[in-house]
Image (cartoon, rainbow over all chains, first blue to last red; front, side):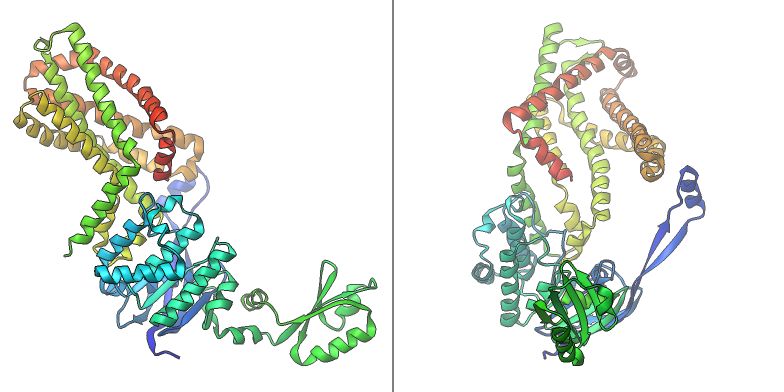
Length: 322
Length: 256
């Protein structure tokens, strides 16, 4: 495990939203006597960032993931709590801090839309004060890992989503940041583009010991990349651990069976937690009960098909987040 | 403060004009057509050296140059504030905050794309003024006057602007149909602003009360100008279609 480079303590953020009254007179009522609702986006989030790790920050929509990333990248103030990353407080020492980090938000492209991508890369070279040799070396590395050299000549508006994302991610890593925040890095991408980005992130983390914190809904990203996982729900961290910890979290196995004879669900439900999916019956069985349950099933029914597995990541997260 | 990154932003903006060349060339072509039409109409009725009810051909040239300058001012104020609001609401400021630069300076330079285009038009019209021997002192005075008069008129009519802004923000309550009608005060406000600043600046500049009166009297000139504009707009669309069919889409894409 790498050394701790960032400490996030009791981070809280509440958004105030105007409750709009309906109708014509409602507008004037809101002007005179506005009513607000308060949404607690973060309710005291604490965790650490370690050097050279890939931290998965996952959770359902509205859990507070992007709010956390925005606070950690210095563009949003928390209501309370302490953050120290690389010795800086992001919102107090923004200018010095952002020299050392890279951020790639979904939907906010750092690339200039109408001019070749290379011009944005050159602009970033100037902004971060890279020498010609350093720049050249970085481009060679990104070309080797992401195949971007040809893309640099094309304006982003003429690129496919995957090509654009490759350029955006390369740009995020251009100035050798020590910490990188990636918001949904593979959303909307096909399997080939995803794989390329996974390989790139793994390789650059290995080579440069960058700390990567990524938020994602795509569980393939987590399975392929993350050393550690935090699950956020309604502004609170409800799980922290490794991928293996997460998979075993529920302490159950899933038995999927297809039975020849027509039987009513009620017959099985008495004994096991079961649901019907198409022609299959899906049983959720505690780990210690798997063998006796299988034996029981084989004795009672003519089984056409059988599959025993750990719950998928989706199923675990769904269960954890309720 | 390191200047080089900011200069590089300008380099990229100018490079972007390669993509938007027709956005730049068409208005310049439009200005040329406008000027040639004015020249043709004027020489058809009067000689170049003669004046008509206190207005000479040169007065009209001043008129066109100040129109550009006044518009650049209005566009800088109205459009820039609009762009700023749109970007801030849409999270566009995030990009500026994530760079180790002055975020405001970076943001304003990054989004000064269209005002730069207007500056090209001002330069173009100033060159035309130079060719036709307009007085530089009068021009400079006119620039200052046009900015101040634009500002004063904007302040004078700001109550209409505020009213329309209040209505604008309430699309939610007033509904789409009423919202569309509520845009009219804004158009009227801008129209009045353009009309008065265009009309009064050359009148004040050239100095006499008689001239102001004559400008007001000769509504025909305003009509001629309106006719020119009416011809010009379809002509520009035609030019767009001839030279670049994708231009309008590009414009829409940028606006989005």
